[in-house]
Length: 124
Ligand SMILES: [Cu+2]
Image (tube, rainbow, N blue to C red; front, side):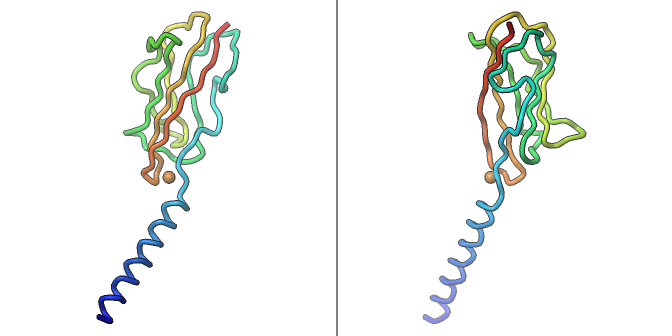
């Protein structure tokens, strides 16, 4: 009986530590981007870059740009910079026509947590 309740207490303590360490590690969220969120550009951008507030995993992190109608205009799925593991980027191979575009990002942080979102920008 004694060992049983002691075992339960140890299990609870371990669980509490696990929960604490999970919340102590932050998910990755965008810090800033180019183009900026909601910006109005007079010159069409040739790439989209998002800097995150922590390291992101290259294999599972994606960045896609679409028109307001949903047509993809970026190349591939984007990539994490080889020299900066907080930078997710994609080239835009064709000159963007005037209009509204959405940037869709999806990343896995080093703590294994998934975050995703989207933001618009406009080319005038
Ligand atoms: Cu997290």
